[in-house]
Structures are given as C-alpha cells and as structure tokens.
Image (cartoon, rainbow, N blue to C red; front, side, top):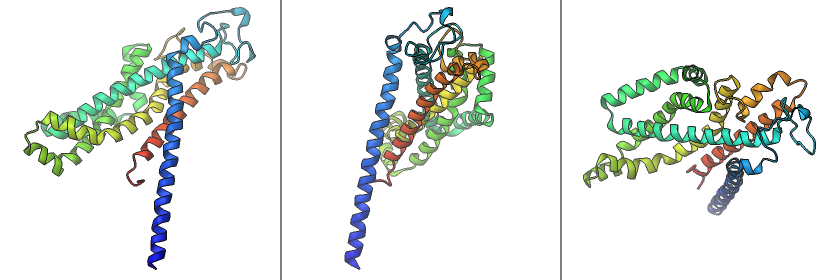
Length: 288
C-alpha cells in the first residue's frame, strides 16, 4: 500500500509539472501573438501597402484580389491598408483605456480599503451607482454628452469602467490589511503609503494584471461599439468599429467591406482573451 501511495504521488507530481510546462508554452505563444499585434499597430503606417485614406473611385468596391487582398470600399480605398491602420487606432486606444482604468481604479480601491472610514463609504457608493447601470448604456450616455471622437469614447468608457478595479483592489486590500506581516510592518515603523507600495500592491498585482489583460478584449469591443453607433472615431479615421458602421448597408452586396474589419476585431479579442486566461492559469497556486 505504501509503495502504491508513493507511485500515485510521483504520477501526480509529474502530471503537475507537465501541466505547468504546457501552460508556459501556451503563455509564450499568446505573448508572442500579442506582441505581433502590438508591433503591427506600432508600425502600421509602414506596413500599409497603400495610403489608407487615398480615394480612387475607379477602383470602388472591388472584390478581394492580388492587388487588393481585402478588396476596396465605396471610395476605392484599400481595405487591407485601412484594417492595418485601424488596428493602430483600436489597439492603442484600448491600451490607453485599460491602463487608465487599471491605475486609477486600483489606486482608489487600495486607498479606500486601507483607510476605510467616510472616504471609503462615499467612494464605494459612487462605485455602486456606476455598476448599477449596464456599462455600454452608461458609456453611450456619457459619450453623447461629450460628443463624438475616439478620445471622448475612451473618456466615456473610463468613467464607467474604473469601479470594477476599485472593487477588486479594495476587497484584496481588506483581506491583506489584517495579516500578520502588515502588523509587523506597522510595528517596524512603516507608514501607510510604504505598506501599500511595499506589501499590499505586490500581493494584489497578479489578479489586477489578469483582469486588465482580460479586459482588453472587452474594452476593444465596447470602443468598436461606440464607433459603430457614431459616438467614437469619426470618418475618415480608420477604426474597425466605424469601418463596420460605414459598410453595414452593403453587408449583402459587398460583404468584404464589413467582414475584414470584423476579422481584425475577432483576432485581437481572441488573442488577448486567451492570453489573459493562460496568464491566470500560470499564476494559479494550485498548479505548482
């Protein structure tokens, strides 16, 4: 019986090691794909085979071909160039949005959780109000008040999206605040901001980063949704949501005008979601 127990334990350890190696492999693959997307967005201008805003009515609504692999739109603009350039606008706008709501929301949540008191109560009630409304509907209202433009769309989504990070950071801070090592830090003379920076933030950073990476896909779709409804990027700016909006009336006759920017959204969202899921698995302490 003892020998069988040892064999079972050895098989379990080997299984955990193989599983961890598999997760590392997946993480490397999805990190590489995400880096390719970011590099493609960074060097979009150099990668475009044509000027994305150059109009040529003699080539309007041409189907995909060797000269124009993604076809052309109603103004004769090369769709491949516009999809590549749209990736720069969509991906970098999403990165800025996620960075803003992550930093701001986490900072607010940690301060509220550590300090408590009236400040915590007031800010958490504000979070409750923001979370009580459907996010996209609330963002539509804010964007409509601010007017069109990709910057205003980013601001609108930031206004309604930061409370989630504040809630996560606050709950994690409340869990850690009464830990023994926090008491030891206080006895050692550490001030509140030192405890937050040295002990609390490093311990909650993993979950915050996973949430932020998973939010990349969600925020990208919501930005595209605002642009699709005319409250985001404005023509002639190449942005995936606005490109789909401008071609939605031609979905049955010239489907490539809508499908090609949709492919850009699908691929980007899938890569960031898979990266976030894999990163969460990698940080899972149950997988040693």
